[in-house]
Length: 212
View 1 (cartoon, rainbow, N blue to C red):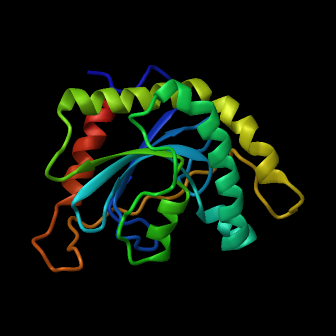
View 2: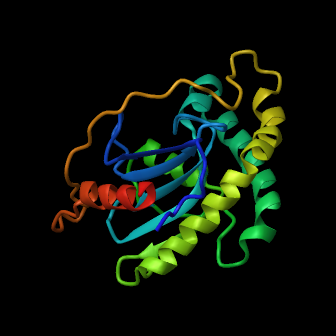
């Protein structure tokens, strides 16, 4: 079953650890009209909680480039403004089965992992002991992907004034240069030293489902 609506703009990227270790594995779906990198712009992403007990399917924003240009305080203030604008434009279409805030709990011990929490726009959580069926997951992926695909250019225009305001070193949304992919390690141990959860397998399986 095709999970993503037909579009020449999709880019699917997955990683257990890319660049600085975030201890939050992820699988992202990018619309290249908005961004070609998870370092900036708006994108869809599965975020695996660091203790391996939950996964979030979310609409999120890249942090790294904005934080490098502006510093953490100003970067997160701008991301919060963009998130609020996009939530207003999204809530009526997605409905109340989604959470529209940045209150996800990834239990990350790194600043990069924690930044994923603060940049979140909307999300659903699936707990390890209560995972959705294949059809339920497909429905959630399709609902968010269809909204993302339909609204990519609208959201770009909503975000532009916030991202471009009076800071000459700030890069505007969107960008075009993709980041390099570093092959991930195969598994991750949670802080309690439980048996390893094979994140690489989980990411690969999701990536195959989405890209099929």
